[in-house]
Length: 264
Image 1 (cartoon, rainbow, N blue to C red):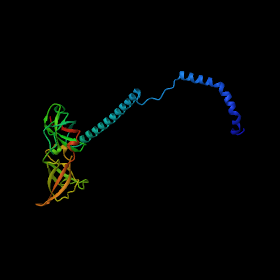
Image 2 (cartoon, helix red, strand yellow):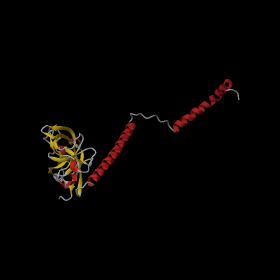
Image 3 (cartoon, one colour):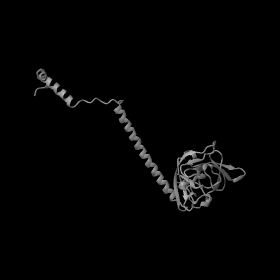
Image 4 (cartoon, rainbow, N blue to C red):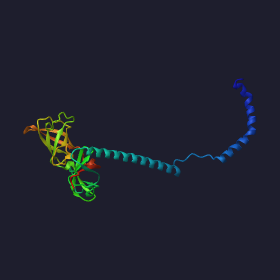
């Protein structure tokens, strides 16, 4: 019960007397422990074993990311197929394609033809409409089709497309109240059109397909966006607009092509 500083004066020498005889036994016990259970040195991070484990970890990280990306692509594909199937225009068969190359011999501001990894063996037909992101027209299938490949004509290369111009928030259910236009290429990757209408035109209006020559399933799909408006001096009630395609040929990696079932 005495304070420790008083006890240390005579307990420390006594502890030395007791520990001296027991030290050999302690060393022997430690030696026996090292023999029975050797001490493992920490791993060297640059050792072959460590490098192999790090390589396996990186591989599993890659496989995990790949699985997530595959799932995301499949979910997006299913959503696209469901959205396009819900459009009117009769029964259609949907074919998903990827862009695997471009045509040779084209340059400048004109978009190249895009080579698809699908052809007549999957039912592709010239003029079939290609969609991107459910509601945007990416182009049409060209006339050159083989069994396993075909060419896509990007929408920005097409001319004479009849469209209707819709504001961001439609204010009327009367389709005739929205101005119509015929898009023609400018050579800069955009279209121009003259709009003879008293309706107000604004930047950002959406040009939706209203061309009877196209399949019914494509009607109403997004084609472009109004980026410039200027008056026409000779026609006070008319304006000249510039329309930028919603889908650029450089941004296409995969598309969904709608083929009407009524066609052979």
